[in-house]
Length: 622
Image 1 (cartoon, rainbow, N blue to C red):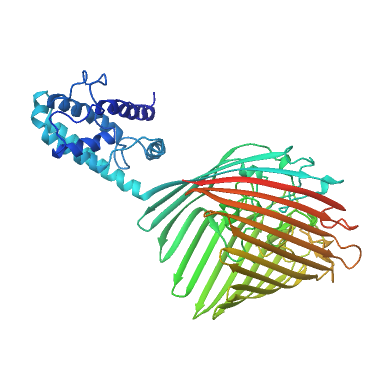
Image 2 (image 1 turned 45 degrees about the vertical axis):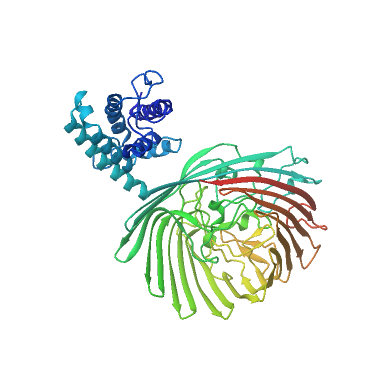
């Protein structure tokens, strides 16, 4: 048996023996008003005091003082074995200590400082009896003193280290009801199962995050261990999801380190090293949500998780964040996708930052200034290309830079952003490859505020056809990060007590007929020059009981090419959320997907397609 197994078994045996022993009631010479009664009770609660070696007291009679002294003497080595040795002392390693902490969750208790204090009181009270039964009192006191020091160090360690967990389970059912089922996709661009029965194809997902947080002085550290099949469900990537259906993904559980980093102050900066989160602005560096049907922090927080280092300085109203990192680790979790390979974008127009295909490394800096109420930001991001599969490298580096400003006045805020993505040709690129430095800009002006209980957001944006930044600037139906669009949008939000109503509309026009691919060649865009694209949303959310809510939402996207038909994609979603307990949440979702091509294959690849997605999710925090 290993030392750890002996440790766990010994504690379990001690607790098992202690419980029946103390069921006898108060000791004969330790009345309820005696000072030792409370100490004995606390030692009993922690499972420290044991009876005779056979676990009995010799019948129903109460213990005598001599018998109790013997119990104390037998408890000393048990307690000593229960106290892990901390760094700097001989004994178990830190890895073993962490494992013992995990075991404590199962009900194993480690003695506290108060236990040792109570033990000292008991030794002093029964010192005469201990001497009479042959116990070396001086040696015993030395052992207890050493024990007290080890417990103090352990308690300090526990205050620094925190362990939490997030556990999520969900089931996804789907079906496609169409003459051409292969052309039906969900809102995230996943191809739906060709089955026409919701119960014929159900995918079960398990996701558990064990979160370790450590703080000591100005130094902090965090690590997240992920267990389950959630990342497989996402097709092994969080940022460049292709149109592969759930039914084609293996149901395999993996264990991986999602993030792990430490932060220390160095020359006035907070310096972080490891696998850490990074995010700038929605136009320059922000991860879009590839899983809109479920709630999971790994896909919802907007952060990329990269391997490297970053530093952050703050001087009054000036903040600087700089980083350098590797992006190709861990199954593509950190690739800077700009345009996912889902309709209406063809695979030729799919690309990562600045037109790259395989981002390898990146570095960037974000500077923010607060001048009175005015906030100004400037961002620069450089991304290097690795040799893609196939051995052809077209671009060497992408450079993305932008500026943004926010001006609050009264209850309103005026904001604007300008961003540009450039790419340079690699020296080994095939002849005819050209750099991307035209039609590669994006800008937006936005005004948002409130008129009484009515929230208002008005915006105008232009995204040119060759713009490609790893951001999250818009979604029109299934079209994530649309390009070659220009036009206004209006959003309204109104609250009637606890009932919330929203409405949104956007009206875009195409800018060009062609755009650059990730090989720099020209390809037709899904929205041509002067083509129209309209998007409308409406929704209502109202409470269901004290801890529940029901939401109804519709989204209608109408394509109006300059020639041909006017296809439309429509989504109707019902969402129910309920707090089942303080740390447990339930989410139920059902979405109807309806596409009518009206004689055109845009944007699904089929003239007509219908389907549905149903989700049941339970999330728990510990």
